[in-house]
Length: 272
Length: 287
Ligand SMILES: Nc1ncnc2c1ncn2[C@@H]1O[C@H](COP(=O)(O)OP(=O)(O)OP(=O)(O)O)[C@@H](O)[C@H]1O
Ligand SMILES: [Mg+2]
Image (cartoon, rainbow over all chains, first blue to last red):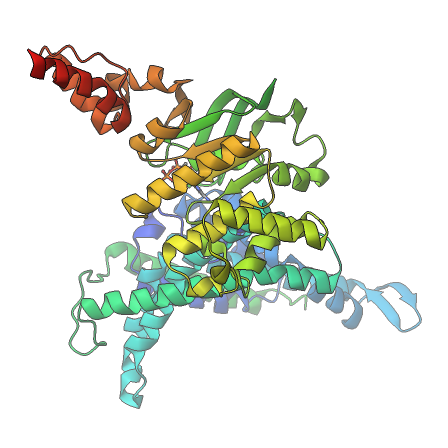
């Protein structure tokens, strides 16, 4: 097992239009897109929404395969929802009846529709993390949430915690990989045995991992104090965020998409 | 017969992503039984990646690894057996300690081998003796030990498996000069007493010069040289070109020769230098 094959939340550096967009705009537009995916009630609308996603993937110049890879871990969830939909939604022509189980055309349509919806949802949001570095992303989040300061929410600390957490995910994965290798070199058997045996096999990995995480946390805290970090009050930024023409154009594009989806709902019959 | 042989090993990290990185390319080496091999190379030249292939922690993208003439990946299910025969001590091995006592931590490897309690006990004590761990330290938690002591516990943990081939990835990194000398001496002693094959990765030319019989030089994932130690260190210019150097003593002797002193070549350790210089100085005194 190679842990570094996990790609969710991973950033793939690049210079594409998507990479260079203002992260605040990207974040808001991603949420807008997630909303948009729930608008369509017919195949035409869903195709438009999926087509839009494909278009942004092409704009990002990332390998399309990568975007599909992000979906892989949640395939079981998609399968489960699809199955539930097939069994529970009834209507249209009955294809199969057995006791309390009824499989209908409507059930299958709904299942497919919702599966595609989830696929768009996941790929769309992973496109955000693929093209935005974690630090930029939390930076954007901090800016977007800063109005919440009026209700005494410490947005800066929240964002800093998120930045640090995100920053250390790859480090932790790498560390886990290394410790696993080191214990395997001493003959640790992580792959066979029953449930209890497998849980016990985790001890030689978890303990060193905890120890090194605490060590890292102390080191980081000391390093931050040495640089006189004392929270968000009066901090200025090295990287200022600016909106550009491309950002304005993309906002209009997404608004147009949502308008189109509503229009399609209005003019075409619903399949759900 | 060579104990370890590799044929055209290639390995790529994160293939098929923008992060792909060819870590080793076309590595073919033969290592004879009982040899002491040093591996040197610039940071990122693929040393750690190569040694992880020798005990089957990494599976080559292409190429083969042979242990005693048998392809180690012939039966992937039995790869654990290979790891008992080829012991690998990782870079900063002290980060892998986890047991309540140092004794138990050293016993982790042998008990994974399924040995009986007496044999495990004998092996733990023997390994502890090799790395110079006193009895009272064995009963202490490994987390209460100093950095150097932790390193010893970790090395003993692999030695206790009594592997036919012992590989150590930078065993002296981050230790003081005395600690380095002690650990290297103990490794050398282990090798002589057990007649095992030892492979040491190091950034210190002095360490390599003192211990290794043969040196493998890596550069950007490829083998640059693989030869007897004197032969490698006589190619100072080529080593310099790939960001490495020869031991400081060797450099001094090269300068002396360039200034016209007849001190001879093939000097790599302080002891050799002393043996070479003392007679010359005596002669100078007599004249
Ligand atoms: N887990 C990994 N994932 C991706 N790339 C890696 C990984 N480990 C090593 N690499 C890359 O492979 C190359 C070879 O690394 P390796 O660790 O073998 O070098 P090394 O010679 O041991 O260096 P050092 O002297 O710094 O220990 C490097 O360029 C490194 O960035
Ligand atoms: Mg290394």
